[in-house]
Length: 241
Ligand code: FPP
Image (cartoon, rainbow, N blue to C red; front, top):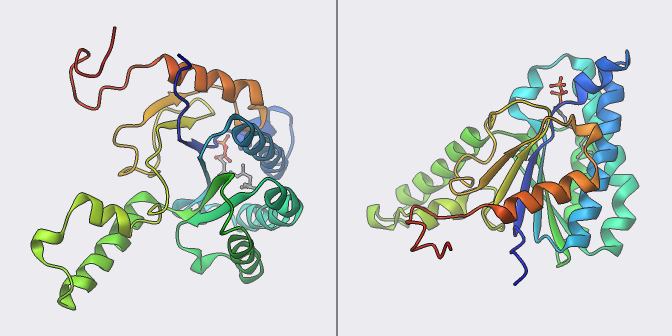
């Protein structure tokens, strides 16, 4: 029997700055190389038949980086949308965002929303871009939505459930990630999909994101397929040999 593929892969793309530094280049060059890795990984996931891919492109905390780096990242995002538009259409990829777009510069925000609208019926794969995203912030927003409903008399105490909260998160239209990958050698989640990753397999790679190749993604998926997922059950209950 062929081992199961993860339905949803989520990636913390870390190491662009160190990649550039190692070459004596500005950080911007690392981010540019990082956006090429984004293209490679989107392609390989689509080809493998992955249902959803989430990329942590910009965290709420990243707004604290120097202005020049922030504008550079926003510019790259705008370029990415324009450059990849046709391929996203051809490959029937549905693009969605996670996070609060309010602070994203107007022209980039408009492009992204236009791409989301244009691709909303696609069923080939979902590409979720986490932008100005933070998991705690997302949970606070979800809680506010629920409190709003409760105050309007549309939600009782008993109706506050896991499924109800999940439906108020930005990821409402996505399955939970089965596999969370972090490149760049650090071993932490940095405020990424904390609720949704409750049962995800975590893989930490020392490869810097711009060096992350299609073969590396395939190797991580193969590692995922070797792991036993128990969801709190015993090995026997979970069907292990
Ligand atoms: C972390 O590396 C990476 C980011 C903060 C940005 C990720 C952005 C891209 C890969 C490019 C644009 C994205 C899209 C979707 C087109 P770091 O700068 O923190 O690296 P360091 O830890 O080595 O300094």
